[in-house]
Image (spheres, rainbow, N blue to C red):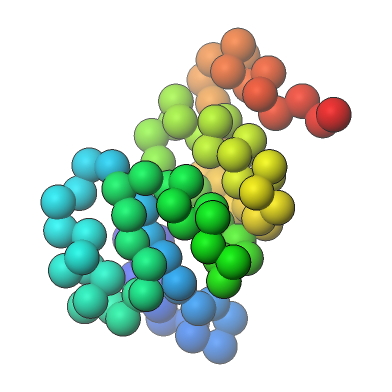
Length: 96
């Protein structure tokens, strides 16, 4: 859903990568929408220099870790809410 909405606004967004550990059709999806990077591991996308920001639309219990990793990689972050449902995982988000 988010991918299709972003692709409707090419003057605002350029989708350069997608990651999903559960999808078997990522290559097909990337080819279909002309997205240059795809991976089952989001860390691969965080390592790409042309990825400036990330939209996190994963399972809620993964949000805090992905936010932390994206911030460490210097990416701008947009995340679905809630950030998490477990305050113990939210400790990852403390400002240093």
